[in-house]
Structures are given as structure tokens and as C-alpha cells.
Amino acid sequence: MSPAGCPHVNSFKVDNWKQNLRLIYQCFVWSGSAETRKRKAKSCICHMCGAHLNRLHSCLYCVFFACFSKKHIHEHAKSKRHNLAIDLLYGGIYCFMCQDYIYDKEMEQIAKEEQRKAWKMQGLRGLINLGNTCFMNCIVQALTHTPLLRDFFLSDRHKCEMQSNSCLVCEMSQLFQEFYSGHRSPHIPFRLLHLVWTHARHLAGYEQQDAHEFLIAALDVLHRHCKDDNGKKANNPNHCNCIIDQIFTGGLQSDVTCQVCHGVSTTIDPFWDISLDLPGSSTPFWPLSPGGDLTALNGESHATGATTLMDCLRRFTRPEHLGSSAKIKCSGCHSYQESTKQLTMKKLPIVACFHLKRFEHSAKLRRKITTYVSFPLELDMTPFMASSKESRMNGQYQQTVEAFNNDNKYSLFAVVNHQGTLESGHYTTFIRQHKDQWFKCDDAIITKASIKDVLDSEGYLLFYHKQFLEYE
Amino acid sequence: MNKEARLKASINQKLTETGERDRLKELLRAKLTECGWKDQMKAQCKDVIKQKGLEHVTVEDLVVEVTPKGRALVPDSVKKELLQRIRAFLTQHAS
Image 1 (spheres, chains in turn green, cyan):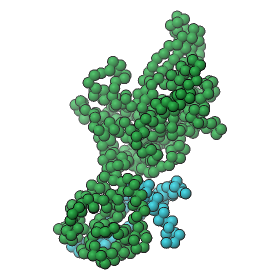
Image 2 (cartoon, one colour; image 1 turned 135 degrees about the vertical axis):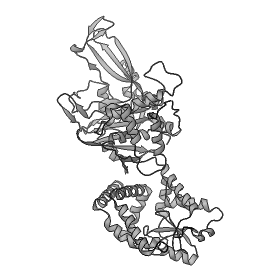
Image 3 (cartoon, chains in turn orange, brown; image 1 turned 120 degrees about the horizontal axis):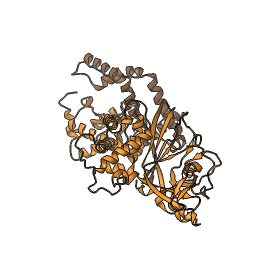
Image 4 (tube, chains in turn purple, red; image 1 turned 90 degrees about the vertical axis):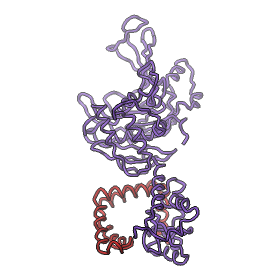
């Protein structure tokens, strides 16, 4: 292994050798895309004995794969006088004249670049746990795979006006760059953790925190730091036009109906997530008020008895009697009257996050509700829209028309799960890449997951995005 | 090729196609670094180089000398975990 390099490579370094070498790396050593992986799986076997292990090498002068351990590649080198071969496992270049692996600067450079490229396409990277920080890691995984957010940060659209190094948007931007950099080793998000502690004091410390709380705190800080980007401030401080608002903010309509004069008082509040009560909590789940024939829309049946996400949403949007101890001052009657309240969706966000309230923190009880809630890959929010409610009240059953309205249809792209108890637990995330490839992110470890794994999981935070975004 | 060899080949194909092989490699890499195996191997390699002399030693020398020790030193827990993950993958893709 002479540091001066191998003299025999010179006969290889002619014509278009660089491009040829790159191709070999891309196709047979570090396959980046599904296509090249398929080709590699099929063609990378020893031309002499058919083995796929045994330190397979590829001749650099012709298309010939052979194993090193059984000296098949040596035979080829001798008979054809092709003196260079590449190790398909590690990408090292072997010279049969020098009888050793050689280190050529130019070739090393190419090898490094190709390796980076192969992993760059993935955008998958583990996150080191810094001490009970899985509550942060799981949310980071969901955010780095949120379509529009990813595009925003990767195209570097944030112009920072904060003086100090404490802008969370800048840090997020850095984080996204790290994820899509092509580095394979797990990322250590210490700067992010520090910024979170600085801006969201209630989350500081090394105890286990709630992932949902972290999500809301992170969105809040990002929203605040983003606001400085806009030249013009919107009239409503709660609804500026920053990227967070564009993606996550929806409008929740609350209608309070007076039971005497039937006058309706409506307010619309912004929301970033929908928190849903579950059966088994201390607040009663059943019975639902008669809400019309909504069960057929998402192809559900209650034969199995399992609670579904749709059940939770139906309960969330049901009319609720406010009782005699909670009378509202009615502007029509000019007095306090009993009323009913109903929540519906006025405006749907591009990314909808559903929070299943599994952690009960009532006065007596602190426990985790592990009731299984089944959730779909595709969700139609039409029945829960304020407009649908109005149509139903007017006696119009618009279901067939609304069903063709793609704007209310959502696709699942991330699921955060909590395993364990209230006192000691662990968060993991399933994320979706391309149309149907799912991966499980467990701190530093990323593994392939099946759709079944995802749908069978307990579910704590469910992330859906509008279907019109499906361009991948 | 006999039946076992064919089975091995088809498993390998599936692992490569889905990219699972690359992910398992990364996992193994991380685990072996974590438990100090990588440092042990480095020390072993240094010994071989000292023995054979820096000018004369080849990669093949290292492979021949260090491989058996390397295999023996992999902790059982790491073997177990990899096996578990491969099993899980196979169950998923059984057809």
C-alpha cells in the first residue's frame, strides 16, 4: 500500500473513465433508488458460481462479477489481464498487480460523492436520544417529513431578522438541511434541544415530556419567529401568513344555540390540532346524539366494535347540551338561557393533526388510556365541515356531491406512538415516503415498516395532509 | 443451485431491493461502535500491522488474521437484535 498510489490505474484512467466509475458506484455499490436496488439485487451474483456473498467484486474493465473469497475474480483478472476490480460491499479498488487495495485520490473522491448522493435521496436519518428526548425526536421526524414544510426549508426561504443565535426557524432550517444532506449517521439535535429549553421553559429538564405539548410549543415558537418574516403584519395577530399558518392553521367554528329562541351565536377560533376524547376516559364517550347517516361515508362498519377515528370526530362535532348550570346570555332573549353548543370545521388546514387524549390528568386519576382506536389511511373530513352541517339543517343531503370534492380528503403521512405508562414511556414515529413506503423512526434507528404495522399501532398523534398534495 | 442456496438468494434479493439491507448495515454499524467492538478491531489491526511491518502488510493479511477474532467478539445481544429484525422483515414479506 504505497502512499504514492498505484501506477496501474493509469491504463484505466482514459476516455470517459470518471463517468463509468460513477455508474458502477451508483448501480452496483451504493444503490440510491428503488430502480438501481432492484437491478443490483438481480445482477450482482458471481458469474462463475452464482454466489451473492463471498466478497463480490466487479471488474472495472468489463461487465463481470465474481467472488473474491473463492478467487473467481482473480481468475478473470489473470485470463483477461483486467487488473482492477471494485469491492461491491465497500467500494474499495483492488489492483491485481499490486495484490492489494489501492487508494487513488481521484477515485476516492468519486466514491465519497456517490455514497453521499445515494443517501441524499432518502431524507431518512436517525436522531440521538439526549436523555428522555424521544418526545422531541418523534415530532422532529414528523415535521421533517411534512411536505410543504420540507419544501419551504429546503428552498431556504427564511430570511432571519433576529440578532442573536436563538431563532428557532433558523435552527429548523439547519435541521432540514442535515436530514437531506446524505449523511447517514444519526443526527445529534443538541442545539434544537437548547433552543426549545430557552423558548419553552415549561419543557426544560431531562424528564419525559409530552410529545403533543412539544408539538404545540414548537409550532408556537416557529410561528412567533416566522412572523418577523412578513413585511406586512396581518390585522389579526392570530392569523398571519407565515408558513406555519399556511400549513397548520385551521378554523374551528363554535355555534351556541339558544334553546328558547333558537338564535345562534357563532365564533371561529384558529387551531393547530384537534384533541379528541377517547372511550374509557372519565368523560362519557357514548351515546352519540343522532347525527344522521354518516357511517357509510368512510366505508366503516361497527361489526368489530372497535372505536374509530371517525367515531371520535363524530363525538367531537356532536351538539352538546350545556346544562342548567352553564346558561349563556342570549342576545335575542336578553336573558340567561340553556343552550346547546356544537363544533364544526370552518376551514381545514393543509396538514391536520389529531391528538388522541390518552393521558388522563384529572384530580384523582393519572393514567394512560390504551383503548385501540382504528384510523384510516385516507380520511374525508366532509361530514364534519360547517358547510355540511348547514346543508343537513336545511334538509339537503349533499353527500353524493360532497364526496367528489377532493378538497376535504386527506392522506395519513405520520403517526406518533407512545409505548409504556404515564411514568415511563417511549415515543416512536411512523413516517411515509413516496406513496406507500413506511418507516419506523425509533430515536437513532430507522427500519422499514409495513402499512399493517402502522394501522395496527395504538396511535397518539395522527398527521394527515390534503390529498391535492400528492405529486410524489 | 440447491434449494437452500436458492432460498438464500431470494432473501438477499428482497433485502437489497427494499433497501432493508442498507438500513440493517447502518444499524449493525451503530451497535458495533456502541459496544466497543470497532475499537477492539482497530487494536487487532494495529497488532497485525506491527507484526507484518507497515511497508509489507496488505488488506488481505488483515482480513485473514482479524476476521475470525472479529466474528467471535460480536456480542450475543447484537446478534440477537439483528436476527430479530431480519425475522420481522421476513414475516412482513413472506409470500
